[in-house]
Image 1 (tube, rainbow, N blue to C red):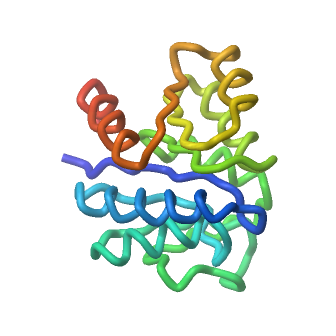
Image 2 (cartoon, one colour):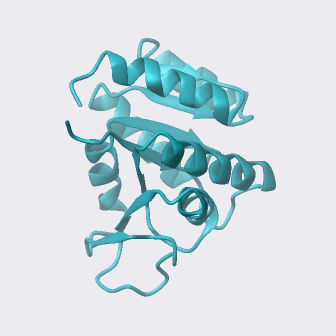
Length: 166
C-alpha cells in the first residue's frame, strides 16, 4: 500500500509565529502517522517549519522546488524535486498531495488552494483569516474544511484518507 502524501502549503517570508508553530507541529504529527510530508522545499517559513517538524519525528520529506538548483533548500528535505517552473510548481504540489493543509495565508498559498479546489481535492484551512475561510468555502463548500489546531487537522486527514484509495 502506497504511503499517503500530505501537502502543507503556506507562506514563506511572511509566515507568522503561529503559522510556524502550527506548521512544525503538523510536520511532526504527519511523520508520526507514517505519512510523507510534501512542501515547497525551501528554507523559508511554513515550508521549512513543517519539514523540520517532520524530521524531528524521523519522517520522510519531499520538497517540490521552484528553481533549477538546490539553492535555498531546507536542510530537512529528504527528496528534492527541482522543477525550474517557479510558481507553476504549485500545481505539482497540489496534484501530488493526497490531502492539502493550508497553514497560514499568502498569495502563493491562495494559488495552491485554488488549484486544489479546481482539481476537486479537499483542502484543510488552518489559519486565522476569516476572509480566506469565507472566500474558499464559497468556491467549493464540499472541499474546504476549517480547523482550529494541528491535532484537529490530523483527525480530519485520517477521515479523508479513509475514504480515498491511497
